[in-house]
Structures are given as structure tokens and as C-alpha cells.
Length: 74
Image: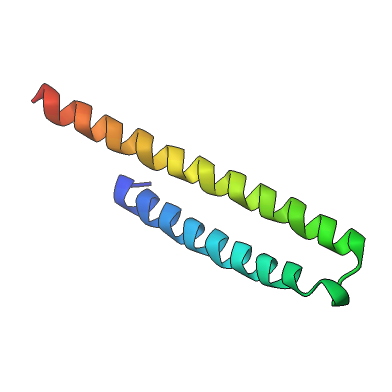
């Protein structure tokens, strides 16, 4: 897979994660309609999605660092 395609794929995944987190947070606000177990599951899902988002952010930083090192060597 080319680097540009991989970067676009990361952007799409990040966008999907953001949409999912927003949806889950909106659901969590409707407490009277969701039982405690459901709210707990929602909080766990938000935590997992936040972890994925942080992992993607670290991948972007790593990619930018590599690019900077290549430029400074030239």
C-alpha cells in the first residue's frame, strides 16, 4: 500500500472514530432511557475509541518525524 493511500485510510478511520464517539456521547446523555449496564458499556466503548484515536495520532506523529528526519539528512 502506498504511503499516501495509507495516510488517507488513517484519516477515514479517524473520522469514523470521531463520529462514533459523538454518537455514543449523545446516547450517554439520554440516561433515563438507557439502563446502567448500557451506560457502562457505552463508557467502555468511548474509552476504546479514544484509545484507537490516540494510536492513530501517534502514527501520524511518527510519520511526520520520519519525514522531518529525511528532509534534514538531505
